Image 1 (tube, one colour):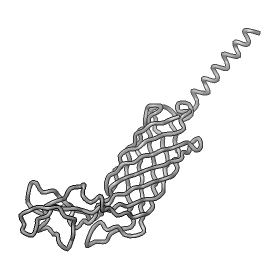
Image 2 (cartoon, one colour; image 1 turned 30 degrees about the horizontal axis):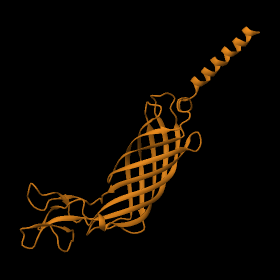
Image 3 (spheres, one colour; image 1 turned 180 degrees about the horizontal axis):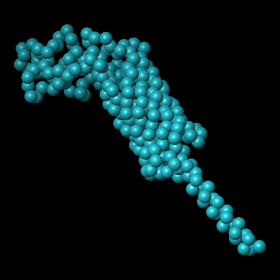
Image 4 (tube, one colour; image 1 turned 180 degrees about the vertical axis):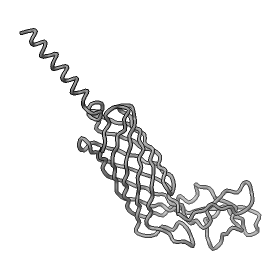
Length: 245
């Protein structure tokens, strides 16, 4: 009887190890991780940005997402110009009234489409987030010649006063933050995520998708051209982070 009992225990351990070995990596190697925090660099068709994600498992293959993005957004008509021939002159965008920055606060879902079957494999997920989007228009300042044409001073760009004959170059980027105007709106982001980290608790991923930012009125970025209230863009997001219990 004692030998038979030992045999039962050995069979139990072998079967348990076999079942564990057959479980997919998402369940076997990552069991216990319920939360994650990650973020990275956004490269999109109209600028650059940074973002953060916080996620929590809702079901075995679905996560709740909370996101934060901050990025620059260019107008399609922006072209760099030079006002005078001088090696010290800084390039500027002629006709640009404001620089546009966007803040997004999102909530959404991440659905695992293809889980990892081994540590070195790739997990593929579908992601969507939506929420408020705030456009921040910061006035553009330029270095310009005074009336005499000898002294350079910094002034807010005024299309009635400034042209290529009296603009020396781009002004300090720090000017204008106290004059920012906010434009409330909303956004929708849809993407596919490829997660390839070989470490159990690490996150390395590439997110590829599209975003639409929409505002209730047009944001004045450029003069003498049509400004937009809809800002569609495509992007690649390079992500790094960590999983938590």
